[in-house]
Length: 604
Image (cartoon, rainbow, N blue to C red):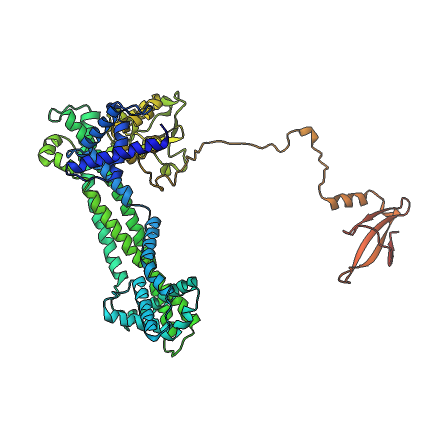
């Protein structure tokens, strides 16, 4: 079966599953259905063989299983998958958000701009209508007030007229289409800057919101709300982890919890861990936005002061001096508008994520949790890690040469190493079939096949060192049964087609820079017998030695007066002449003997 046929079959399966869900009163997205189809096929419990073509019976079974999973009202696992799909579909990097926002704004403005650039106005009424369109376009593009407010339109018209009088429309219409669009953009920026400046000094500003004040107040409120959600989520994490750790790792049997309820608690722990992870991502972006707003507000105030100083007490100011400042002012205001859009997106996504973490609260109510928590100390990740911080003894694991152990004292960038499984212990994950316990770096980090792993305890580290390949393989097997772990633990290499990968998820991966004690000595001379103590490397020192080889009374010194060809500046050159051997030695840097002898000086 070729690729086209396979793709067609998959689309038909997705369509049938979606229709079945609609028939049962539930609407699901195609993205969610596609994810569920792959998850069901990968699950070894369902017995699908991915290496052969699906039969009609296989397809019917697949559709039935997917519909059951998608309509299960008591599945924390389904809640987590929905959360992951929603986040992937609605959240991206700051740069991509802004790029998409600008593209949408520009696409909405294109029909109006096209009407202006394609206009062929000839009579007075047509010119007036065209000018009115230009003012409204500038007003819409700037976002400073509503076009339905007459006072706002009048103020915008006055700002435009101060830069672009209606009498210049003829010149504008004579321009090429691209030049018209550029001039409209420049006119928008200048008139926007003028209105912002007038607002600051109480000469206008009708319909213009005080964005710096709004953002300064809204960002801390958004951060506080997200931090509160993270705190509430952490409480569930601590409760679920404490119960599971007590029952599974400490082997304290609980008669009040069944295997089915225990499995639901593991799924619930995965759900709240995923919610916590997403909320931390959003909170980080909100803090970044706060930093950007602070910078923009400072620059905005600085430009307002500069413009005020430029135009203060002056009847006329050169446009080349003030227009660029108005443009910069408008750009900064545009950045603040974009920060408002980003903040709205952050807030909406954070609020919506909470709706995908409701099932576990309905299952594990206070009446269910209180008996389970009786006699159990609720601890957080830091407390649990501090109680199990004994380091790995290298002497114990040195026989397992396939695993290299890294510690803070032998690795420079120890804290920056990106851990596999998002820092969760791979041993407890495999041993207890989905239990998420945070790994402790202080115990030691295992480097296996160029990947780094942290562990919940020293014993888990020893177990991994002994059977590293087994645990690495088991992680994939656990993820096949619990597909929501694929994105939470970032197992993208093992499952390249199951879920979209965030472009920045592994952007800054650090390799271990291992330190070790070592020393080296470079010998001065490798072969001692070849040392010549009288060796000299300086050419002029050798020349001086050559002069000393001849007795002074048998030589005469002749001085030659030379003139530099270019400068004509005279210089003196000493030349030692041996009358017996006709051998000469030059004491200067000039090569070759001059022809004219001016002065003679002989030793007695």
